[in-house]
Image 1: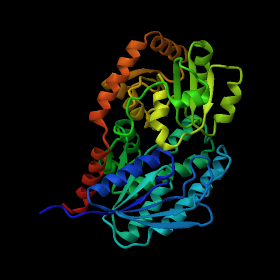
Image 2: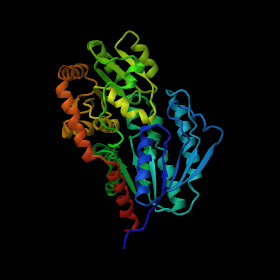
Image 3: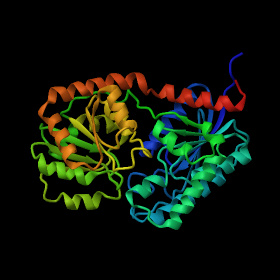
Image 4: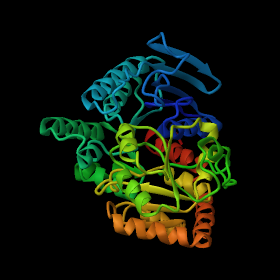
Amino acid sequence: MPDRPLRLAVLCPHFAPDTAPTGEVITRIVHELATLGHELHVVTALPWYREHRIEAGWQGRLVRREVTPWGSITRVHPFPGTDKRNLLRRAFGFAGFSALAGVTSLRGGRVDAVIAMSPPLTMGLTGWVTHLVRRGPLVFNIQDVFPDAAVETGAITNRCVIGVARRLERVSYRRAAAVTVLSDDLRDNVAAKMRPSLRSRVHVIPNFVDTEFITPGNRLTPLREELGIGEGTVVLYAGNVGFSQSLEMVLAAARRLPQATFLINGDGAARTTLQQSAADLPNVVFSGYQPKERVPEVLATGDIHLVPLKQGLGRVSVPSKTYSILAAGRPVLAAIDPGTEVPRMLAASGGGVAVPPDDEDAFVDALRDLLDHPDRAAAMGAAGRQWVLGAASPAAVASAYERLVRSFTDLA
């Protein structure tokens, strides 16, 4: 007798058409689960990620609901703040969103599981409350371990705030029937904060990349023409321009390697300061986030892609853009803690090179070597593409969530 379809509640901070990377991840997982015949009811924020304010056409209502062929989407106000560096204001915004999402998620009857995505960390308690009312066990998905990343970067230094966040973290883990993380490093981090009897609840389910949407493209893209870059070699950083990334080191590399154009594509709390620091660098170009349909073009624009993460963050965060870069057939230079997920991924795939974090000389030497040997760099890109085709498909990730839910719901 075939398994009956699942009925799932999904709580997440972003969902299409929002442009956040985590929103793209959960959107595809939801659609893959729907393809398997399951019913899903999503509670998320109104689109706001691109400019940290609600996008045109979505304003005017605290809550918007829509019916879909596979279930429903409820979008609530995210209470965004215009100052991305005001952590207290952002914390209140996350709390307000989580509370409103929790209230709206209680309607609709019993479900087979509640899947809640973090950050923000407050979604763990939101998911737990939803579980209490709708009865489905809680699956808590961790994209980045908070507050570890914020503490490592110095974004949070107040001991009281850190203590409250760590307590909330432990409580959220204990309330979940399962905690899913992206890598073995994150699994070890989370499990160490749980009682030994609960550590088996932590499961590794990596993010995916859409290898049909992102394919190796012509490097001479329209984006180059728009930005006035020309046909020369482009070293690209694409993603959040924040304080977790060692982007000051990228500017240092641009000073020492004037033969290449360095493109920083994205927005974030550190962009204004970074642009001011790069004012005297004619080979550094900035551009904002591009719409989703242009992501393959953006990735194709770069001849070499950078994944720089500050020391200590490799074990609490896995930059999901690494999968996309490999899918685009471009080589990766990562500056990240050795022995963590991205260096292991590059070693397994042959898709790039990893150096220690925040080591400017090692970073520049590795980048110079890639620039001096374009054939070797191109071979790395091709190898990365072949590896990701077999290792990170959307269907495989959705099936892993399906198996996990069935394992503790006795629905098989």
